[in-house]
Length: 374
Image 1 (cartoon, rainbow, N blue to C red):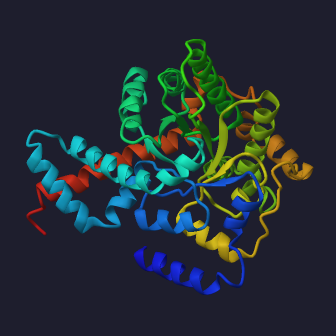
Image 2 (cartoon, rainbow, N blue to C red):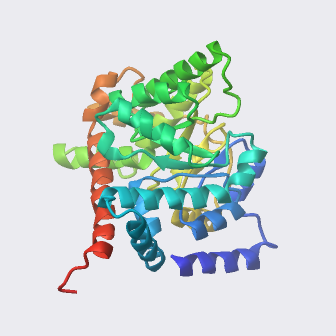
Image 3 (spheres, rainbow, N blue to C red):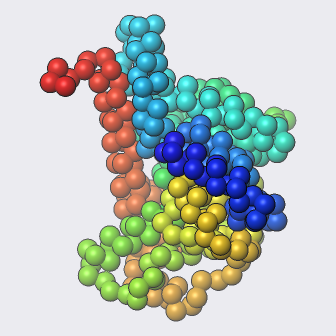
């Protein structure tokens, strides 16, 4: 990845006189903001050059950031373990995640000041193993909020998580809802955060510098419907399933605008360029992985405002008629809050995040107890 970052930086310098990268144009010409879906310092620095004013992270991304500079982090793991002789593998691993996050947050401090807290934030995700314990999620959110002034804390959009979001918001934590794929989840998140903000306002507490967002993992909704299509032997025209996440995001944006929610939507989990190009123009956040930013800047696609353009009726009708799971994701009342955790994309993503925690502990274990066979 270091080679890619170097090559991109060199190419950007060479081509700067020829054209403005599409992502930078988007940030200059529309209210849509760019965040970097990575906390790796080299990638984040390059993205800032394209106008990025924030960064997102999750257990998988944090693991990738650590492994991208493993010799350094192995040394730091050993040092931390020596300083904390009774710390568990999990505690050491999460200490590394926090240190990584503080470093990344510092790169965004200028944007945080410029945007008065609405941007310039670094997402830190709560431990996915706490997904059943709302009080523990709140406590960890408060802990992570104290790591740096510009931290934003990720909590999963499940019934337990949404309750924790309201309480953490009330305590002054800016929230980034994650494990979120659907319109009903996004609406429930925005309502919970609004309740937390109103509770703070009722007590005369500041909310002006808070910057909550709600992620919709658009590509993971597409992935889930493709899994359903294979499972249920549903055949549709090529490309139809690529629009599911876009349709859900556009619907949620319309509702957020109508209801005046103070939470912004954030597009993540890219699978195709429409997860950017179809969502430009709104007061939203686009958060592509670094590799996708490279591709989008090289695409030649104009960053035109398309957020309010409806999905073609024949595509939307096909999705709605052939996939009950899409109806659950698209209709604002398609699921109750109690059903969020059992949605297929939710279960799959939580399991992936939990597996990444195990892998993080494995890195620590390899430092503290190296495999004698290696």
